[in-house]
Length: 161
Image (cartoon, rainbow, N blue to C red; front, top):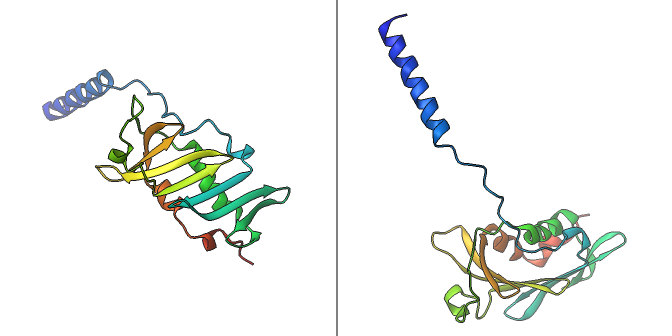
């Protein structure tokens, strides 16, 4: 074996040993935003500035859009809203905040209600990509994509014919 080959082999072994020594134990998965089972939810309501923008009801045939118009809803689109219930929490404020304005939650931008469980969307965080949300008086950070999905117009949920 040539000297250069031995040095490369030694360096590869040292790198492997270093990577093995610095490996992270598998972390616990992030806790979900709520304990609600999406399959059990029967009503979803979306409010913007306190005004109803969207209402959906589950019936025996699937989901029905009941506001702003009455028609069948696209199941895939409703499932995107239901995914919010299991959104991984990226950070949680340890104490209940006295000043919700700090997180943009004193007047939420959007509120989603799942069978009465309210999810309030506040300000985007820094760095970007996450958003402050409150559920059951807990302030947490979740991925901002859920806010963008929740803010889609009602016609996004109409079933296509």
